[in-house]
Image 1 (cartoon, rainbow, N blue to C red):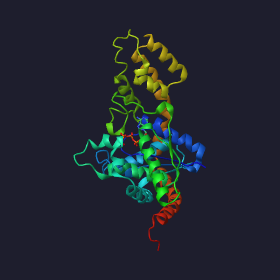
Image 2 (tube, protein in one colour):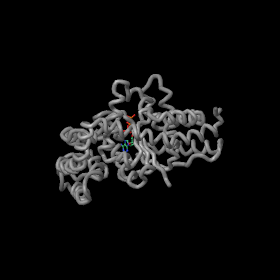
Image 3 (cartoon, protein in one colour):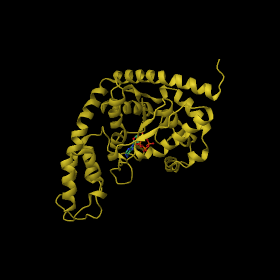
Image 4 (cartoon, rainbow, N blue to C red):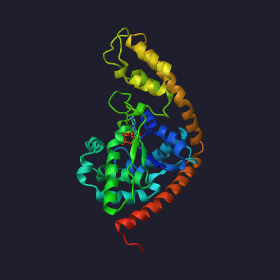
Length: 332
Ligand code: AQP
């Protein structure tokens, strides 16, 4: 039986990139794999980037990220869902993988190179992010990892680490594969500056729990096809982020209509954005209502996370026993 693992960082408001690239797939795969689908809020990863996380807000953001996952439909009775720092085996396996991984491999990771530039003195944890991520996945011997394609390089390194461990210490870990939703490979930021990402702040993101009027203000101001200067100019939906969003939020008829009408200047950008907003409202209203209910019952969220950590440790414990023995640690 396959096992699924994925994690999400509590570094800001969950956005539609996280939702379509990852969270929605957690729910879908949870229906299929049940308790063999394991998800966590990766707070240990969040602290690798001190610019994106601080001790005053980390616990609150962790709670909010968990709540958002429950609000989009993750059912703790069906899947295992917990907070990473509640399962210390992640750090133990992460250290062992760090010791197996050449520094050069970590230095060539694109995400590291992108983020390292922010620092005068680069935190070592930022470099070691991928070995901890490999530990997250392999601790559960997971072979299926639902993530956006920005994580492909890290998953490839996870496979390399699994191969190396198996070669050095005997067959132990599977070689996991990333699974992507083809419509949500890399959702662009609403400011038009590359991938939507929490670390880029609210000008880049459309939050799944963001008030609808605030979302509309962002969509209204969002760039469209730069070659379409006047309402009467034909546009090209293939270079327009609003059309990318339509593919996520609108029904097939609307997507087709926009595709045709934009090209022949039959629909203006404002009307096209209003149509998009209808889909956004339909999608996000029930999620935001569920989030409100959960906010009124924080003990439910905490209890579910506590139970999830217990379930995760029941799997992680025996795997670590096996790893410790293979690596050669003294057993007393
Ligand atoms: N724009 C995106 N399109 C598709 N998938 C995305 N994911 C993130 N952004 C997009 C997927 O969401 C999951 C969790 O990602 P993350 O917690 O690493 O956070 P982030 O939003 O991607 O934030 P940043 O800006 O990259 O980093 P931080 O948190 O440091 O600010 C992943 O599966 C990711 O692929």
